[in-house]
Length: 146
Image (cartoon, rainbow, N blue to C red; front, side, top):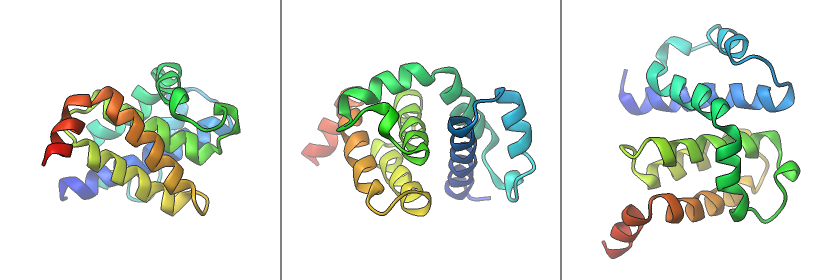
């Protein structure tokens, strides 16, 4: 399968997992086992999925702390979809420098358009753009010069 589609499926699955976790925190292993039964699971990039789901859950507080200064409201006021997409985007920005920051933000925006509220994608775009300027400063500056 094409890497882009496999990564997108990984993001969708990890988003579902984080969403479920924000609604009902359970053991990451149980969550993972449940997701493995999801349609299309075999089409996902397994390494990327593992990094996103397990890495996000393991580092949730750190990722939330990175995101919080860029929010226009409190963390607890965000919807579960917004939290999930922002955490996934933050995880990719911080831990996957091989993926261009614009791709990370675009994928997060697309997930939010699919699963989030009406204008949530604008909010996600703004927050992740600010975070990218912080954690990928050199890449963002280089892109601005192009």
